[in-house]
Image (cartoon, rainbow over all chains, first blue to last red; front, side, top):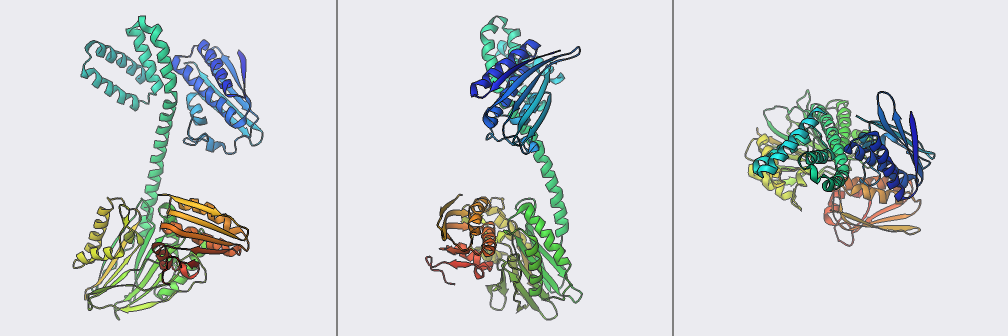
Length: 133
Length: 336
Length: 110
């Protein structure tokens, strides 16, 4: 069973809207305070990347509820310039935003599952999930 | 998760204890638990959460007022937590790189190993110390079948790994030359062609190459832009700079070199060095080449190896034990 | 220490004025500024070193690189106003024989 919600990102305040929606969903799913903060931070990073590098994109939330586990999946998509060297941006210590922010490796550490697809000139799609423990 | 729960429990207990006693012992306990947090990779936001849980237990009535402030603090800690994790990962990565370099440095020093020839008439002292792990200075000795000794001292531009890589190239090129059949200037000319073909356009190598024939007492030498060494004449009790001119290796494939010669007599001394010796810095002031000579003079009555050791120790000390450049010093003393 | 690079860009002649130290840390910056200028066919590239008080072998390497490129591109590379310590480096390495050096201002014998 799954349900979907979506926030379009094109100005800085949209990042806040995405955070708020994600936190609400995480709280309802039964995530603890610390995990709520982690999920929200991950959403922030993904939404900021869209805002800073792609200009416009979307952040979706999917709730996953099966018999044995519950979780939240965040999907961030944009039609921006794409990422040329994926292994470089996934490398710790490499941040294009001048060292501020956790970057994608940070998002991967905050969440349980992480997947990225990107094509130069076409855009980037990131899918990341955290499970309720 | 286990250690986390354990830490959370003792955190609450310690906090309770401190509220009751307000004594230093409880605070010392807090310091200990802080170290345990680091050891168990507990992030700042988790610590704040422990504090929230402890407050819930100790002051349930205050929770309404305090909890929002604590949640705020927890959010404010998020970036620190991430940065700390990244720092841990980078530290592990650094250790990995360092051990790789250590292996490479070990291989390099094996490759560099050049046994100092033992002979009655010549007392030889050598010291070569890299500024970092990898040495960009090179020296070698070869004793030919006829007793002639060949000595090379070279400085590869820059330092560290790129310099060390070029050095292996020099070593193999030199090993491939027919022993003693070439004069010092033809050896430099051949090396120059190898280097010119194989290095980055901004790289070059300086080298001083010499051959000493113990039967005739003749010392032949050529220089490819290398920091000039000194010759000490016992007869005149004076030092003279080697006047050997030549272009550095690797710039122009058609460069030719000159060979000079010198008679070495009993008590004479040959001093060969790299610019790590003459470019030692005392704070911001460079040491004059004369100062190098002064230090050598102080110790020149000692055996050659003791002289180079003392000179090195002197310059190591005035640079606060932090070499800026690789340091190589060779001293030959004719004793018979 | 730092290196300041000031470029006066002309049609047939460019002047690069340097001040500070050229060492392993500042050499990459000099390389990035200097090398593109050596690729302009038939031009003169003058590098003024009057305010450079220290240079190490890495800095010398940048000039060796610039010399090779300028020869390939028939650009005329000239170094002017070298201080004694810097000039000595070019002399020891034999580079003064193959490079166009002009130290008239400092009045160093050659």
